[in-house]
Length: 90
Image (cartoon, rainbow, N blue to C red; front, side, top):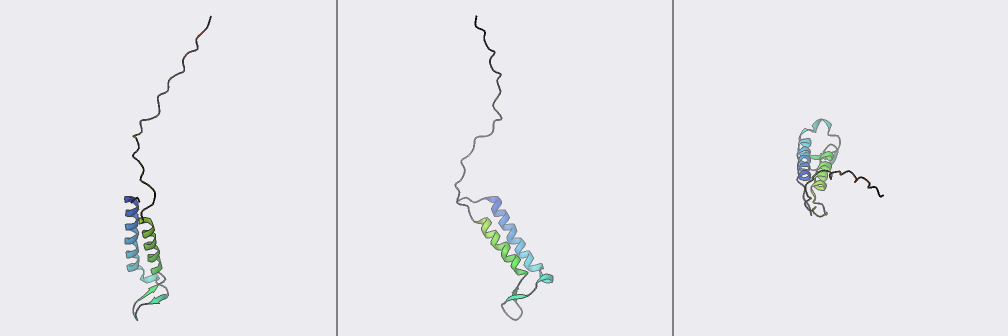
């Protein structure tokens, strides 16, 4: 399994964005979908955070592809050599 630093960074950013969204979504909360107590519940605006967290899990999950072997450094295009001049037969 292969972990990618870029994918882990993106997943971490999604988790941070989900946490920030839960704190600032008060003006657009909408209906209460699940009442946890008299003063707390899950609203429709909270679903965006759930989607972001699910995306973070999918992105951070290691892929099943094998690691690529190290490639030789690129040395440029092969040098062009002009064709040999035709020889005359007598």
